[in-house]
Amino acid sequence: MAGSGSAAHDLRVVSRTEANTLLAAALRTVGAGLDAQQATFGPPALLTEADGERFTSALAILRDGVALARSVSPGLIDDLIGHITLVGVLDPQLAGRLVSASPRAYPGLVLLKAPRSSMEVAEALVHEGAHQKFFDLAITHDLLTADSDQCPPFHPPWAPAQRRWPLEQTLAACHAYACLARFGDEAGITAGSRALSPQSLLPVAGERSKVLGHWLLNQGDHLGTDAHLLLDGLIGRRPSTSRIATSCSGAIAADYVIDASLELRRYGSPDRVLVGRPSQPPQLYWVSDDAATVLELLAHESIDDVARTFARRWRIPQFDAADRLSGLLSDLYITGLLKIRGTAGGGP
Image 1 (cartoon, rainbow, N blue to C red):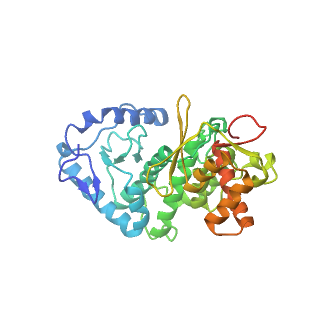
Image 2: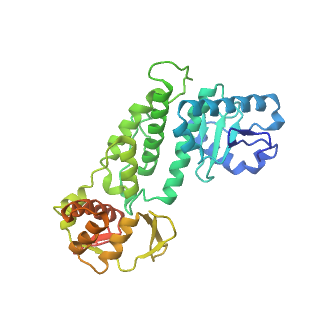
Image 3: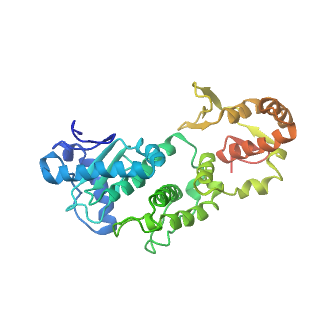
């Protein structure tokens, strides 16, 4: 779908004339979302080589936008752009108010309305690159818990009154807005040094990420271990876990037990271990090597013995090891890989 001359600084861009047929399902998916939100009709369409100057002009702006993004925030862009496999440029006459989209059923595909400026491209790459990275994180990391569906939805105050976001969408939005806020700061948006389109989210990204983050901090019982770490990186705080706090006076003092049916596999990564629980469907978790060692030791050792082992492993006093170990135990409990003796189920 991408011709030899349609690369834009490491991005592959849809260019061949048959692309609208090959990507028809993805375009229909995006079009269905537009119908629901904007009452537009018919799916959007891609610009290709058959559109001549319209396509080549859009491709030139896309290239300039990638270069601008890298000049403003090279670390952020290089981190996000690796999650984008293919970019499709949408015909603006058929895109309605859509600026960009990442249809989740088509990993790595980003659709972008033919841009009018390099800054529009840069912002869209940050926005959609953040979504694509989040989709990859959701597949490979522990972002949600077994009862995440029970979490009440979130109403974004800037959206229509009837709009509600489920937990995962809210977490994805927080991640995207935090990335946009960082890019905006590094681009000097707050100082007014850049011309922006009326649809730009850069001026509001910082405030919205704070609103979303504040709500997510109160949903700790529904968020997985890696989501806690993600929020710590995005907003500098980890969510509270009220159920653990009310279950025991301290994690190390609780009588944790492990599900004996767990199976652990190490595949060469120094700090990632795959944990599986036989079930229908099977449940798979990625955990750190330390967390995996805790699970292995708890199968036949007491908490005190585990703390002594980790004191030697970390080369710190046992008291400090117990304090540090409490965080690992808490995370494993949230995930559902540990439970407290005498309680039902494998997690909160």
